[in-house]
Image (tube, rainbow, N blue to C red; front, side, top):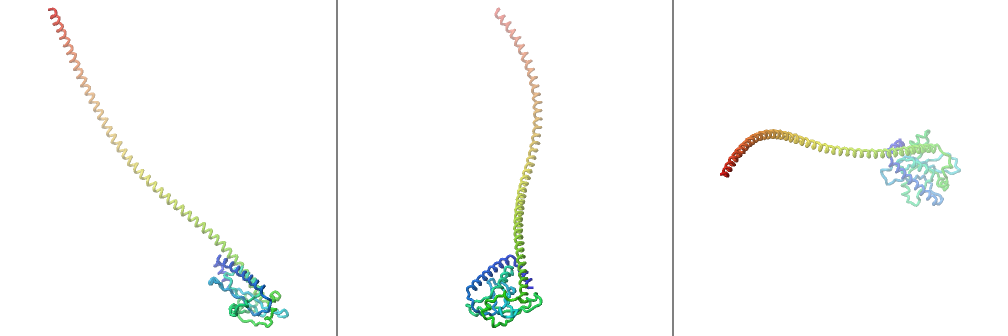
Amino acid sequence: METQVRVDEKLAAGPTASRLAARNARRAKARREKRKLERSAQPTTAQDNTSICRPTTVASAGSQRRLSMTPVARLQPTPPSSTQSTPKCVNAEYDTESVTGQGTESTARDLDMTEPLEVDHEASPSVNAAHVIEPVKIEDEPHPPALARSITLHSCTLDTYESKSVANTYTLGTRPESPEFGYLKLLMAGLQEVSAQMKSMNERVARIEETTERTDRRVRALDDKVHDVKEDVRHIHKVSDGVLGHVNEVREKMGSVEEHVEAAQETLNVKLGDMDERIRKVHLSLEDKMGVVGDKLSVVGDQVQGMQEAAEAQMGVLDKRVETMHES
């Protein structure tokens, strides 16, 4: 159930959980390097071999950190001459460094299982006591899945031999594995597999989110282009409406001009008809007047001819008188 909860939380965390997991992995690596340097500088003297668990680290992130219920086993050393084949107790500690349970952090915690525990002897007892977690005992269960439900807090009975210096040099690899440790290894292997799967799922989710973001950007760009095209179409409609309005105005003006031209043509036709009538009348009147003048001229000609004949007669008479006067 805890693993499913962590899976759901990691799915909800997304890329932010991946970044936090990478940061926590880097911090865990730095702490391991620091502990290795401190171990190489410490003298190999007898130390107090009490059941000390690694202090939990509570970061300043506050609400972003939660208790990761991933037990890390610490087996108590026993003297080499002892015939005991099973450990007296197994110490399990809970790592609070993990936020999302990524695969890198699970691997870091698994690497910490092979490192000896250490405590700052120069610090005050109250500080050391504040970071000491009470050891827990893993009861024997026939099936490994029941291991996580069987962890109960209690105090282990320490052997007097464990306070000797040989406990500092005794390693976990020289002891035979107990069933509890096998169950714990199976549990840790399952957690590692789940963490690896969650890491791959987070990577897939990150890739999907990146693809979604790219798709969103493309969709937004297409929306912007569509908006620009719509604006251009609106502008074209406005311009076309204006042009159509001007065309209608020109048509109206042309219609009015045509009406004026038709009216002017009608008036011209009327006026031309009147002029034709007047010209015909004037021509007739001129013909009449010319006939009258011709008649008058013929009359005058006749009168002139009669006057000329009368004058010739008078001239003959006068010539006779002159001749008679000369003769006399």
